[in-house]
Length: 345
Ligand SMILES: Nc1ncnc2c1ncn2[C@@H]1O[C@H](COP(=O)(O)OP(=O)(O)O)[C@@H](O)[C@H]1O
Ligand SMILES: [Mg+2]
Image (cartoon, rainbow, N blue to C red; front, side, top):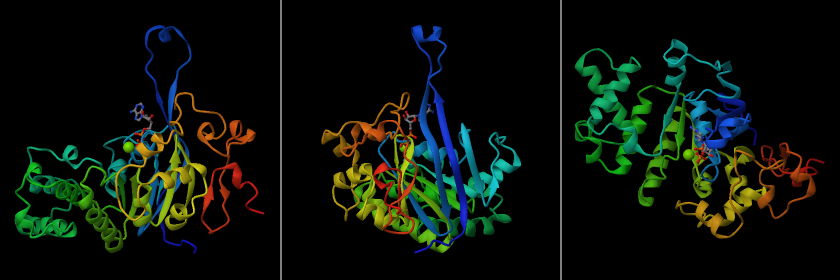
C-alpha cells in the first residue's frame, strides 16, 4: 500500500542535545557534556493519519514532541509545515510563531497539570477561542462555539460541563477538555504525548476512539506518543520505534507490531502484556527480564545504541551506526539494523 495523503508536518535530522550542568571538579574541566536526547530523527505527519511514536521512558519521545511544537529550540535539523521551514530561532510571540503554534497543538499526559484548577471549563475554552480569534461576535456566537467544541469531544450537553472546575471532572473528562482546548485553535496537527497513560485502563479506549474520530472528521495529522506498543497497533496507521534518542524502526502499525524487525522492537512486543488489551507499561517488564537498561545518553554507545543489549550483536554493530534498511515485507517497513543489510537484494 502506498501512502498518498498530504504531508502536514515533516522533520528531518531533528537533533536535541541538552547541556549537562557541571558540578564540583568538573567545573575546572574543559569538556562540556551533553545529553543526546534526540539524534537525527526523520518523521512525517500526514493529513487524516495517526503516526505512533513508541519507546521506553527516557528514549526522547517527549523531546521530539516539544521540538515539533517549537517549545524548545533545536540543536540541528529542519522542521517543515506544509513544506515551509520553521526557522531555528523563531521569535516566540512573533506572528509566524503564533501561526505555527495555532496549527500544531500539543496534548499532554496529565490533564490535571495542563488545566488551571481555579478556572472553569468555560474559562479555558473561551480563552483559547479568543487567542485564536474564533470566539465570534457576541454572547450567542461564543456560546455556540463553546457548545460545538464540547460536542466534538463528546461532552454533552455543554451546559453540564461549562461551569465545572477541573476537580469536578473525571480524568477522562479532563483530558477531553484539554483536547477541546487544542481544537479551539482549529489545528492541522495534534501532538499527543502519552494522552491516555495517566487515565484508568477502563477509559483509555474511549479517549483513543475520540482521537481517531477527530482524525477522521477533522482530517487531523496526529502524532500519538506512547510506551505501550500494543496501543499503537490498535490506534495508529504508522508506527515509529525510538530507542535511546534514535529511530530504530518504522512502517505500517500492523506490520511493525505483528512482524517487528529490529531486535529492540521484538523485545518490546514480546514484553507487552497482552496485544489485545490496552494496558500498562512494557517498560517494567523489559527491565525485569534482565536484558539490561537503556544506555547513558551522555556517553551513548558507539555504533548501534542498542548493541549492548542486543541478543544478535555482531562486531560491526559496536562501531558502525546502521542506516535505515528496507525489511522487504511491506513497502514502507524499515529497520536501522545491520541484520537487514542484505534484505534489499
Ligand atoms: N530539559 C531537559 N534538560 C536536560 N535533559 C533533558 C531535558 N528534557 C529531557 N531530558 C533528557 O532527555 C532524555 C529524553 O527525555 P524525554 O524526551 O522526556 O524521553 P521520553 O519522553 O521518551 O520519556 C532523557 O534522558 C531526559 O533525562
Ligand atoms: Mg515523555
